Structure formats: C-alpha cells, structure tokens
Image (tube, rainbow, N blue to C red; front, side, top):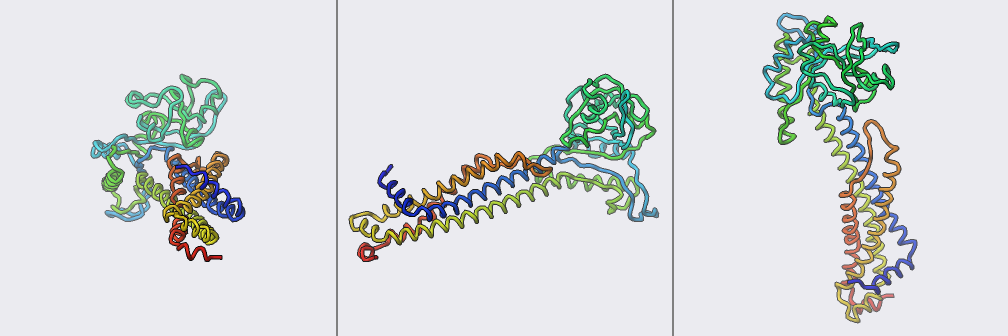
Length: 414
C-alpha cells in the first residue's frame, strides 16, 4: 500500500545528505552504464560476425588444388595438382545424397571485359546455377545462369553491379553484348553481393561455355558444396567433418597424393569456422557481463555501506519506533524502501544514458567486424530486474541489523 509518510521520510533523508546520496547514485549508475555499453559492444561484435558470414553461404565447403609437398608412390613432391571435371563427377557420384547444393568453377583474373568504348580488367568465373547460393548473390535485374545455359553452352553472362556501373553507367545492360577476352556474351542478369565492390567486379559465365571457348578443356579450379540441414548444430558439424575427411581421401587417392598432404588438395569447411567465431563471441559477451556485474556489485556495496551509516545515524529514531510498537518487519521495509529507491532511480538513469549513447554513437562506430551495437529490450528489462534485486540486497543487511536493535540500547545512543 502507498504510504506517503514513508516517501516523505525518504525524500527528507535524501535532502539532508545530498552529496552522499549523489555519490552513491553515481556509483550505481556508472555500473549499469558500463554494463549496457559492454553488452552493446558485444552485440556489435556479434552483428559484425554475422554480417561477415553473409558474404557467402553459411556452411559452405570449398575444395581447391595446390602443389604436393610429399613424395608418394614414386612421385616427387612439387607436382601441381589440376582438378578436372572427372574429380567433380566422382565426388558428386559418391556424395550426392548428402548435398543441398554443389558446383564446380573455372576462374580467370585480369581479363579484359568491354562494352562499346568502356573496358577494364576484371574476373570471370565459370559456374553452374547453384553458385548463386554459394556467393549469396541477389539478382537485381534479369536472371542467373540456368541449367539450359550449361547444357547448350550458351554465351550468356551475369555481371556484378560494380561491373555494370563501370561499363553501362545508367543504361540497362539486359540483352546487350559484352566482350569477354575477345568473345561476345549476352548479358542476362545483374547481381549484388554482400561482399561489396570486390565481389561485384566479376562476371559469371556457364562453366561449360568457359571450358569450350577459352581453351580450358575439362579443367576446373575448384568445387563448392553445402550439405543438407540437420536438426542440431552438433549434427551439422559432425556431418561436415565426416564429409570433408572422406572427400579429401577420395580426391587425394584419385590424384596420386599422399593421404596426409593437405597442401596438394585443400578443403575449407566454413561450418567449423562459424562455430569458432560464435564461441569467441560468446566468450567475449560473457566477459563483458562479468565485468559489468562486478561493477554493479561495487556500486551495490557502496549503497550498502551508505545504508549502514544511515542506520547508525537513525539508531535513536529506530529505537523510538520500536518502543512505540513498530514491528521488526516494518523497520526492515523502511530501510529497504530507501535502498531500493536510490538504487533503482540511479540505475535507471545509468541504463537510459547507456542506451542513449549507443543510439547516438552506434551508427557512426561501424567497421568490418563491428556493426550496429545495441541492447535489446529483453536485456534492458533484465537489467532493471537486476537493479531492484541489487537494491534489496544492498539494504537487507543494514535493515536486518536495524530490526535487531533493542529499544533500550537505541534510546541510550548519542
């Protein structure tokens, strides 16, 4: 029940000790403020990590060839391994039921691409339809490479937005002819990529066409796979580990490579990297929580000490209250009321200040791995609950001691 006299007592006590109350409030507010800022920074790191993985498909497994570093079956080290269509075909034949998406690619860099008077050196990449998912490319005009393009070795091209702006400016490129390494290709689509200009400065072509018109034969540069979804992350991780191990053995055996020569045939499993990044982010956020809570505890200890002083100063008053019939519970509630009030108001101001700072500074504090620092509503409510509990804890020991004071002893206090 609302007791106006109790509130009057609280405000009178605060008015008599303005500086002491202010410094106590600052200690609590600073603790909450630091906690909010640290949690916001932790969220910004998490957002940055998530954004970095938006550049390509999550859980992608990429395979590429390199140079052997070990002698094997009479063959010397230093051999350049060259993947061919047969390597991709044997992988698909053995593991197709495990795949969600899969494809091979054939790339070349520094290739002259032109339209009319505009030209420059860019990258082309021969791909199949699933490659759109691997690159997380979003079509803004037209379409991506399709199965018909592969089967018929069509001379069609899908260009990145950066390349489109370089060559076509504001003109619609769909249906126009561009020249890629002296071969004409019809533009059928334009894409955007979360990776930015670097990813958008390339053109995708059907891999079957690339192998025919650019003299690549059946050579490929690499392969990409994503596996079917599982119920839990642990299942995904185990499935990916088993697949990469088996695929590595298969391709090394086919190409005469030592079973443990990882330089000759490299496999990148982003599923493992995703877990590493998220584990790191979890540890960082737990550390931030720990630091923030320790700061709050320091503030709460300060409040508790202040309440002890207040109880000492009001010993005679408490003795009179008890002599007039005040129960121990009413004494405890009186002290707790003041403690919770100071802690909650101070903490709430610290919370608002922290949220306001994140709102103002956050949009300007952006980097590759730090994006949109913020504290969500659930965490803010949880922090308020922590404040109330902290205020109660801060005042409980002094309140309990006050309730134990014997009236006769209190009345003798000077």
